[in-house]
Length: 195
Image (cartoon, rainbow, N blue to C red; front, side, top):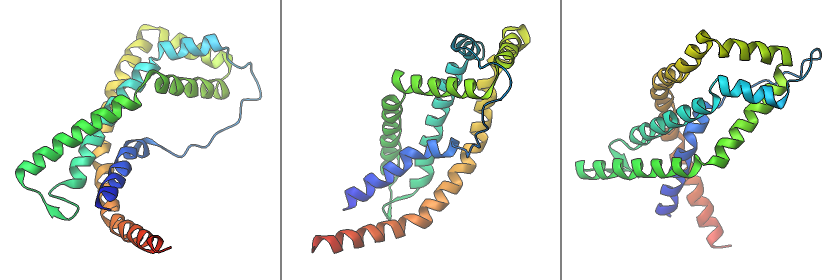
């Protein structure tokens, strides 16, 4: 049962980086006026705005954030036991390795292609052809390329400032909610073992 609890905690932690960056989005219907953008123009737009590089940068920053969440969550204890300095070091190494393996298993070409497809679909359903052309024109300019090059740096600064706050609130919520979750699960397994 303790192994199950530990696996559950790790599973919860693995999805945290995604929950930290998810936002509730209200989808606005397609513009009634104007031509839908072509696939070619959408792909050109994604290229000049460096969408794929931005996704990769955000993914790597998410990986760094999740490692900090692990450290913040476990801190001085794990499963109610105080950790020795050696155990803390080993736990940090285990969690860093786990996080790295998770990212390697998630960040596949198929995963990235799905993200790009979602991005392209939403560009097509949001912007008209003339708007896409205007965005391409801007981002093809020297100024537009300068802005596109700086976007991952800007995003990284924001993520680094938001991640500790998010981790703090996640840690508080987990510490508050996990004991009840474990208690409920224990009760479930004790009740179902006799049935």
